[in-house]
Image (cartoon, rainbow, N blue to C red; front, side, top):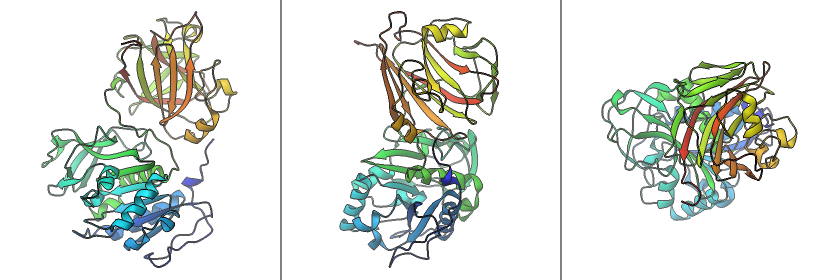
Length: 441
């Protein structure tokens, strides 16, 4: 549904930020997204900045966005910033913008602009409240450069979807003045037991994203060393963050607190297969095979809740998430007594991705804009309160349905994922739930 052109190199056109670009920008098609890399320093200067600028330029070449680079704060005017889909603060330090430039950048973000912060972007503009909220947390201290384990919190976001659950790398690991978890969507955290010098009491976010005052923001604490920008895994991480910031890929970047895992990537305790076919488990991911059957959570039923899970298709594949059905070893019981939130991007409106299958179409315009293509992860939030069912795709609400069928009820039931048939390959991971107060509480 969505164009794959952002993953390919565009071949025509050129652009210059007149008067403040460090070198000519790469050539791309006229409709290519554009990124401004800003690396002015008023404090400590990282010797990896040149490597960082070169890396972002290379990522733009392979991922379909044009890159301009500058250390001239004069680029921060309302007129000039409108030319860019995102601004990357690359290891900036200290006070780098004057009040007029700050105002221009605030207006840019409020009108839907994107921001990506790398490493010392958190060591910047301590007295500018708007920027503090945008970056998410300010630098406090760091130990010596050393290896550490990064635990991936969100394996669907494009900045972390290609990473393993435990990412081993060497960098300068920042401690922050506050924990941003309640304000941002944490993508990855440091395992403080894996290195020395962590001071955040075991909950140590190191990369995150958010929507902020109308704009999109991504931050990663990595990138101190020159070697970081040659590391394929870090480059993929950075690419995904920038693609989110420019709006080329979608993700749910709302803060996520209070969820517990139903499937955490290892144990299927509490789950049962109903009907033919099955799911294979590899690298924390369940992939459908055969069918028509369903893997359902028999461990308990649920009333009011928010259910989140990540899914992707291999191509034009069919599956779905069932809710509100009674316990049964017959998958057709879920079809006849519950509701299916469909995964199948090419079917009719009431039977396509985001629909309540056979009952209520998604808002197809919003769905199409939110949907990432085959091969990329998507996140569903299925929120059930009383007889009302709402569906968010990558953070965008695409369906709002209320059950009026007396033969069905959403007030209590089980959840399950479908393995539709031999030709359908759909993968799921990170199934988690947060129970909500019952209607009327």
